[in-house]
Image (cartoon, rainbow, N blue to C red; front, top):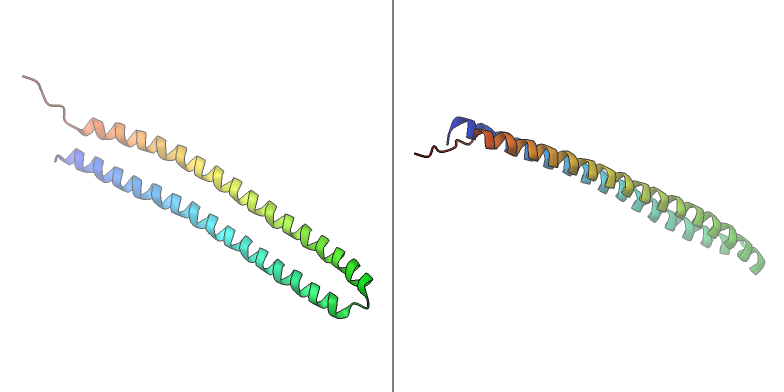
Length: 126
């Protein structure tokens, strides 16, 4: 292999590695954010169950339980919607990042291939 071909192959390899590192970073960020939402959801479930137990323990009658349950459920529903909205925002942001990454990667690949073909010697026909 000629020196220009080796240099082109090295450039393409480094570019591919850098591109994969960028995708890995996007995926890592996404997973971290989704795990945070999962923890929030788990904490909300624990909070909801704890509030129900406390309500039943402190209630003086079924009317207290019903009105307290309405309050607890309303609060739970509101917080659950917030978690769902956050999760949707995370997915939308991630979709935009991956789309941008893909466009950038395609342009870089095209550029690398064009440069690499310039370094390949064309055999002379006799």
